[in-house]
Length: 305
Image 1 (spheres, rainbow, N blue to C red):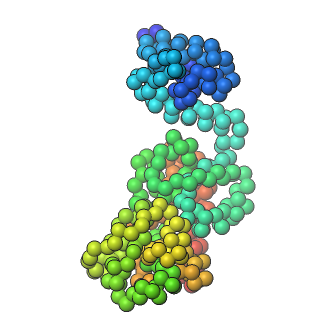
Image 2 (cartoon, rainbow, N blue to C red):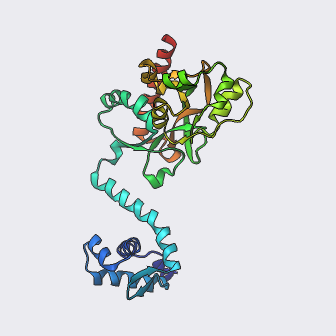
Image 3 (cartoon, rainbow, N blue to C red):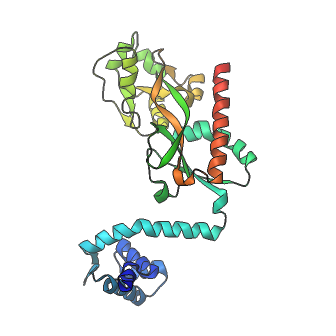
């Protein structure tokens, strides 16, 4: 039993050598990456193969190529090695308990969240914020993220979703586009190029259904970020269904106008999400509490307008 346990737990040195050769396809390049000799790398890999009882590489005159078993093994250990490196970096900095790794949505992050962040920094100078951009559901552990701003439905396995706000959407375009493509009724939009968001595949359908309009929509262009939709609308490429609070500046400046005066609450809403394992992590608790205060203040501002 002890012998089997030993075989199942190769040394990290051997795993690191194998991972480097697998990625670079060369013993010499792996040696440069790990600051070891080529002979040392070769011995580590050979020792790993002997320990596992499996040939991981085919050695040829032209170099080394992963075997089928080697490719499977490389794929399986890559995530574990990444986590070990990340954990080691956190331990070395000795400040990981005071850091919050936050995933934000591109446009929401830059337009709504970032202007408010100085308030959090002033209140919690002991917490260092690290930002990453993510769209959609991802693996918190694998990506080293503590918390995320999510848009969609409150469905995230192994995580707690706290509602932040709904989004009010309306069809918008440039004034020049509207002038050359007059819209008298909502039905007229069906014949125009409609710009679509990948994260809101049913957005336009929901908008038309709110007016009890049925018909075939144009396929139009598809984008992953609202910032790109905004620029496409300004450039006169079509009509975008946009969250109004994200384009306050463009509406106020006249770069965009509502193509038809009908606003609806989007089926998608904004949530702050944290894995259950991080629910009581002090920076997560602090940021969630601050964010909920900011959302409440924002709602009051909307009512005041």
